[in-house]
Length: 168
Length: 163
Image (cartoon, rainbow over all chains, first blue to last red; front, side, top):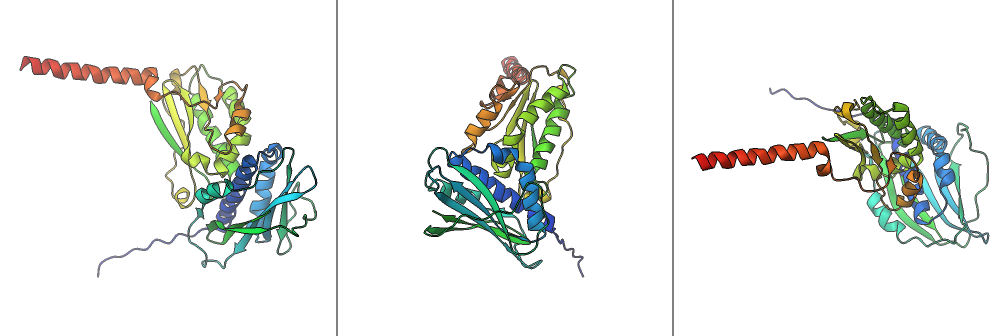
């Protein structure tokens, strides 16, 4: 009988959270840059927001991250949602993937926004969450009357996947 | 001397942690020179940290290298993300050769759509540049190597002439 060996890779929820946080934060930075929206606050608060989103994905409380663009005339559009879908341990992709090339092509089609447009980041939850510094309760802008376009899966990891939806 | 170091990004490290690891590598490499003050290097990298994290998180540094030019050191740093990062044979020790470096510049890549943000972040900061790094072939060390190649060619020609 010939000797055999097996190699089993086990990934942690922390790795899934770290990876998907990078995917979401990187996408948000690229989208805001493409739309020429001032990213000073995003850059300044990066570490705080990164830590919060990673913690909420790891504890599986995060439902979605929402990027709202607030135009000077009061219109809130576009709104970009990043819903997170959790999978049972071992049932998800046993890899880490991000479709950044597809995102780059998609970004080119985003409608431009007027100068002076600002943004807001909002997280919604599927269950009780651990409080994180710098994040306070708020309400989302209405999405009534906005058209919805699905981007599909933006990134996936062993315990969860994140997709993107564009409302305009 | 041309060197390339790869730094494991997500899922091994968050973007901010990855940038910190890159900073430590650059500081440790240039700190080998008695002519370069480590705190100056750390300050320059700190000035670039806001865009550095974005370059990491967006996967831009997976493709476009940050380049440290401190003759004779010419160091390309890229990140590795995804499954490859989980089994990367990482070397974050200082890159040798920096003991004689005196002038140094850290070139940050300017990929779309964050190129303007990078240019804005490095504007007016000493030792940071958003320009394309000079070709390594123009550095003194490489010119010396090239001279060595030419000498070998001349020797070979002489040997042929003697035959």
